[in-house]
Amino acid sequence: MASPIVVLTMIFGFFFVSASCLSPTSDACHPVDQAALLDFKAKITDDPSDLLKSWNQTTDCCHSWAGIACNPSGRVVSVSRPGLADTPDGFYLDTSMSGTLSPWLANITYLEFLDLSELKELGSFIPPEFGYLSRLTHLYLNTNKLIGSIPATFQNLHKLEKLYLDENQLSGTVPSNIFQHLTSLSELGLSDNQFSGPIPSSIVKLVSLTKIDISQNSFSGCIPQSFGDLKRLVSVDFSNNQLDGEIPQSIGGLSNLDTLFLHQNQLNGSIPPSISGLVSLRFFRLYDNKLTGSIPSSIVDFSNNNLIGQIPSSFANLRSLQSLELSRNQLNSPIPRNLSRLPFLQSLDLSFNPLGLISIPDWMQELKVFDLQLASTGIEGQLPKWLASSSFSTLVLSNNDLTGKLPTWIGNMTELAFLNLSNNAFYSSIPDEFKNLTRLMDLDIHSHMFSGGLESIFKKRFEDPIGRYNSIDVSHNYFSGPIDDNIGDEPSLSRIYYLNLSNNPLGGTIPKSVAKLTELRTLLLSNTSLSGGIPESIFNY
Image (tube, rainbow, N blue to C red):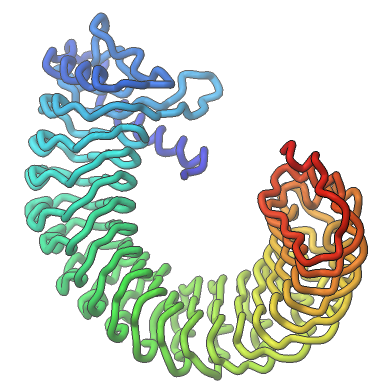
């Protein structure tokens, strides 16, 4: 769900389109257009925010109706679902409506812009008559409950530039020739539906296409071999489908491509060397496929495949690289030291590879990353002291063979927001300096030999609005003693939703103040030495 700020941006954007078309000297609204709009309103069964209140027979649609704009001749050229608040504070109104789409809207023959997005409860087939709106350039029907398939008549929308049908319940195959003549289409959104079958072969005719998102469907078959001919593409998201076959060599010709998401499919074969031609690429995800072979000298997220060999040192030539995700493969050492030369690298994840690191390489202190993940990479011994001066906000070192005492200098790692040291072999109490981790929000140190009390964790200082815990997992340790009676009053725990204290020799009773942790959704206390009953006050929340 978009944030309130983003939603406001969207709505102001739609309002601007309408206003730009409106002429103060326009004629009265054409009666055919007004009748079509009133029929649309008649098919709305619930309008909780009363957004269509101004749409009535006693007023003129060109001058008084919210979301409507006309040309000087009184023909409606823009229909956008109202949503700009009339209140002084300008807050976003709920745009949800229940009902069905009226085919009469196709009678508005001068219509160029149609936005009926985010009505949420609008459920019906898409009227095939919409395919005869020959002047239409923008069509937004996303975030509704539309069913059925895309009408074949959409192939007639020759002037269409933007088509968004995502977040509906549309299904079936997309007609193979539907894009044959849509040469002006620059943005296509079909994500989060129930489409199946192959990607339409006519997609390669969309020569103006810059953005395509067909993710979270059940598309199958291969990516068209000539897909790389769409030279204007900037963003491609084919993730979360059932695509198979190899990544086409032609994809390397997309020199303007910024984002390429192919993850969570059934793609196989090797990664084509041509991928090095994606010189503008910043975001690339290939995880959860069936790719094999070695890694070419190219980009970012190859996690959860069966890649083997060493990480190419030529990664260091990718000067714009921001995120390198290679987790869950079969990669081995050494890690190229020249990765430290990447000036914009923010995230490095090499987890779950047989790297046999023994220790975290000292050169990693030269990295400027905020996110370092080295889970299950064969690290042994104690934490290196240079971590004390690092600026990591996320540090994941779980499933290794780290041992010794948790150092007091961990309190110097004040940028930490997420710390996962689980499944290692530390055997000390939690030092008092741990309270200095004022930004820490998620902590996982389960499955160690930690002992003593939990005060240094629960009484951690924080910085508003960050630094209050979301989750804590200290299970499978040797923490002992009673749980503080005032645990529910600890400010650092006021937003916690997951707390796992299980499998520790904790004693005493469950404090009644736990009921004050009103955000708590999961509390695990099994296999402890706690006694007494469960406070009834817990069930009041």
